[in-house]
Image 1 (cartoon, rainbow, N blue to C red):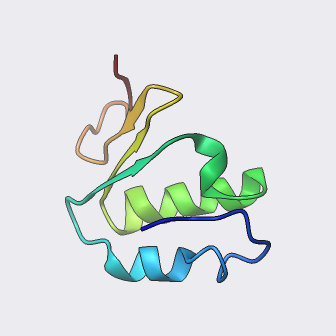
Image 2 (image 1 turned 90 degrees about the vertical axis):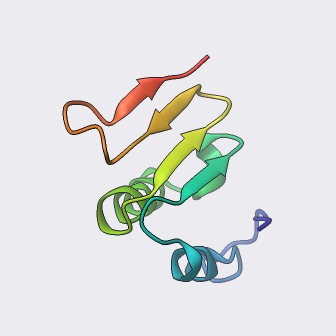
Length: 79
């Protein structure tokens, strides 16, 4: 799925992403800023993906693997 820099979350196909992901899926994103236009929007999407949908979220540029299965610390640095 490709995301663009359109203004609304609907135009960026966020609802489509959330409808398609399931438990234990992995969502790979080039960088954190691709998830939303504001910090609030980004954090809400991360919360929904990781805690509600139980997905693993990989942020390439930041080198982060946000994994809901790791109960101690969901942020693991990847190389």
